[in-house]
Structure formats: C-alpha cells, structure tokens
Length: 178
Image 1 (cartoon, rainbow, N blue to C red):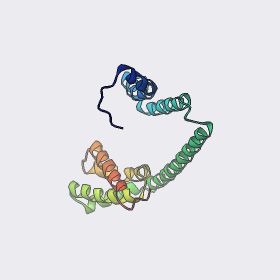
Image 2: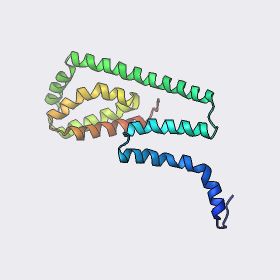
Image 3: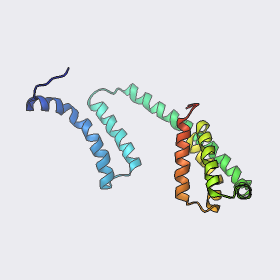
Image 4: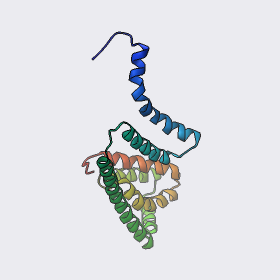
C-alpha cells in the first residue's frame, strides 16, 4: 500500500525496532573487515552465525531447518572436495609425466607470437569453462599453461586475470550444465 502522508516518529520507531538487528549485519561484516577483527572469509562465517542467532531470536528458525541446512552444506562441500581432489590427482599425474614441459616445448615451436598464444588460450578456456568446474580446471590447467605464458614473457598476474575471466565467461555460456 502506497502512502503519501509523512511518517510520524512513533510509527518510524515501531517499524524500525524489529529491523534494527538485521540491519546490523552489513555493519558487522564490513566493519569487522575494515577494523581488522576478521578476514573476508571469516566474515562469511560470522555472518552465518549472526544469521543463525537472528533466526533463533525472531523464532523463525526451527531445529529441523538448522539440521537440514547443515546436511545440505555437508553434501555440497563434500561434492566440491571430491572434484578438487580428483583434479589435484590428475594434475599431479600430469606433472609427474612431465606433460607441462613437453607441451611448453611444442607450443614454443608451433606458435611464434605471444598474442596468437593468448588468442588460442582465450578460446580454449572459454570452451573448457563451459564443461569443467572452475577450481578443477584451474588445478589441472594452470600448471600446464603458466610455464608457457612465462616463456612468452607474459606477466603472471595478467595471465591469471585472463585465465579467471575466460573461465568465468565460459561457465556462464551454454550448455549450463551446473
């Protein structure tokens, strides 16, 4: 309902009082990071604990929903860790078999220009990003591609940004399997 009348102080405080604690969440997160009480990652954990606290205080969260949320968190974390573990094993095998060195030699013989190399890598990463999860592709492909980029004289920070952006764009492209 749209009202055009001016709100009174009493109505404002009646509306503001139940919203006060939830409105503190961004202040706690940003303030805690800026003051140095916790890191950005720890801020996520603090936000979850504070949201849990608010759910209990406002009586909107029951024990069953807490347990269901914990179960879903464990299942999601376990599936991500399985993907990362498999990618780490595959990356270790590639390194043990000296695949990065062989690929570097072949690329340097085949492609003479660093810009052509970057175009090839951009297209390749867009395609890889469509089918493979970002962390897994990073664990597998960065040990392969970073030495090649370094041998072309490409700054590692620039190459990392190219890698991340292309992988992210690829993840947003069809077939949207996730």
